[in-house]
Length: 171
Image 1 (cartoon, rainbow, N blue to C red):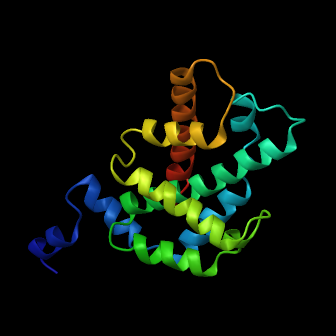
Image 2 (cartoon, rainbow, N blue to C red; image 1 turned 180 degrees about the horizontal axis):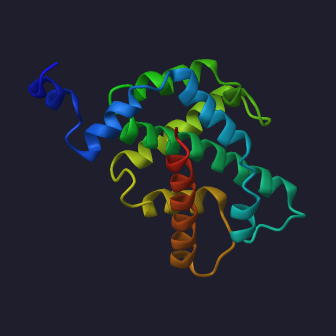
């Protein structure tokens, strides 16, 4: 192999290195990594940061379900960024195989709808701005907060932290 051939095979930039290493992951590895992360998420910290009383079980459960659906949509967003060519295939495989879509006392159809709504909300600004999603979430959860803007900012930070956690542990 001559120098010219070696130069063409070597990645010339950081993004090319990332793409080359990303191509090495199978869908089972990517899905398994997310399932492990997702199963470890209990959202206690996020729920406490929102001031949801631990004695209000129904509200805590509702907040948790919203965060579960949002986490799946955030994972899809991270997939789009890290696996632009395979993200949709990975996500559809997850939807077909995942027990998550039928658990937590809500039907699979409800979870599909919840995830779809968050995907649509994330579509325009992607990971650049989570305020529109935060505003929607604040309305859905009907949280008791006098300062709505403060609540939106708080939720936006919570969503950013969730996204960062998912993105950094993607593979």
